[in-house]
Amino acid sequence: MNIARSLNNWRKYRQTITELGRMSDRELRDLGIGREDIRRVARHAVNG
Image 1 (cartoon, rainbow, N blue to C red):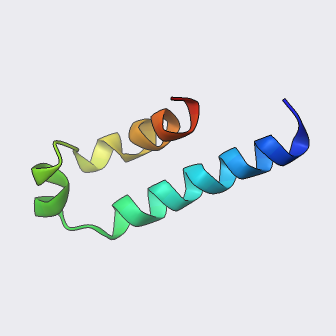
Image 2: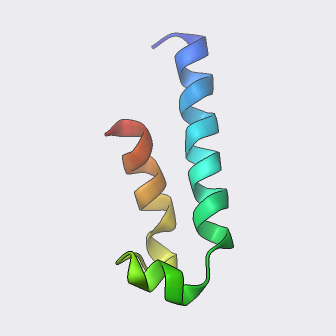
């Protein structure tokens, strides 16, 4: 994997964590995501 792709993946991962982290517990529940699942969801967003 090249450096540019790695950097873009890291940015996407961090952005997903930030956006989900700003949501309320109720909003996350509505999406079927627990606060403890945020990192897993972010990894999935990057890796597909």
